[in-house]
Length: 298
Length: 265
Figure 1 (cartoon, one colour):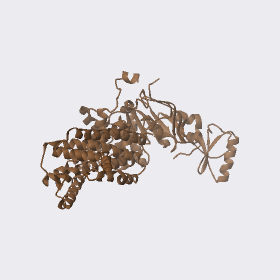
Figure 2: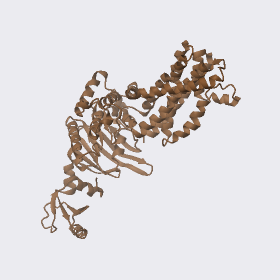
Figure 3: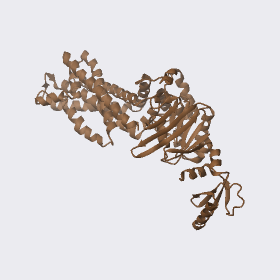
Figure 4: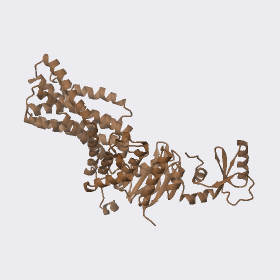
């Protein structure tokens, strides 16, 4: 078995009466990309903060790159790169100055600093904008700089908290390419997201979170097959008709979920004797998610 | 611990590289706003000096054996130190924590809260030590005679500035909102600033007020600067320097506690 970059066992984090993370177990093998998928408030960001010891767990064991947290967190952080959900760049500084500051914070030696900054600029395609002040950059460029800043010291582990939240679809795809390149280079990635497509495209393994704990984990395709089958029957109609379909499918032992204007009947693979008419489509991660958590996402 | 030691990467407290990282960030940022900050640090004490020097100076020519301009010129060094340490520490810390989320970014790097607070205070103290000299330099234009002791003034300003910086960081750490600062400015900083002996000597105050003044770090700073310029007072001055150092060390620990509470959930 490969070494684990992250290992959490029974981790609990409470804020007053709210339990943000509730007996969470999480394994991230080195060299893989793991996606934490869950709606807002599922405890993804708190989990991320626990991994940098910016939040301290009330219970449980945490290990990052072999270091015990929170005691040895600084050693772990030296080899991690963190992309926060909210921009925290120095907006009055230039692109290059932002990278320079973090080259120092991440303790890159004088002889390698220049090259590290150039590499980060190339990777984020910001070479031409090196002298631009951050407050003159577009949202997508800021995100790329935020990622480049986290990777300036070539970390073994990248922690990406909602890396594409609030961006245009086109910009999002640019970032996916960037993250995919990072994964190909062998960097271990833990990424939280509430975009199903993001998790499905980038993650080797997905951990579905709900109310602070893991409800399922596995490669996206296996999760889909296990919980939602190959095919889903989507039935459209007026509310009364949908209620009928729901009852009928329930009586036949099929699992269903409401999707606004339709009913999805899961796991209809090969059920030929089924009389209900509808559109067949491949099952996806969203079906699994809704089925397991009872919550709609995004 | 054993595993970490085996890797040879055991990291201690207050590491130089962590402090350097935070200081570099401040220095690079400073390059983008040094003009405005130098402007206000220079113009403000000059105005005090002109207003008090010529205002009061026309009524009283000598005070406690000093020319009034010399008295105020050396006294406002402490004012400049306070203004360039406590205030930037309070507001700057709050902005970096609350609005820019800078501290979240720094603490995700291998920097602990203790190192972050220490480096920020060192940076502000250094600025306060330098800007603190401005009133003295302005007073020299108006006739203050140079002396060797003046070379000690940046150091005195640095020690006092470190304490006030930590004081400001502590206030920002405990404050729930910007508005809380009003209480501190009105109830703490203004009285301390007026009862420091910058603009008038405290000799004519009642005994109890003079005793209380010894609890005011700003007062020690005022007296030390004057003695540096006009002549030392031996052990007593050393005691005053000790008082400033104790003040600095105490609020330093308080500031670390306040910011840890704020930054680490």
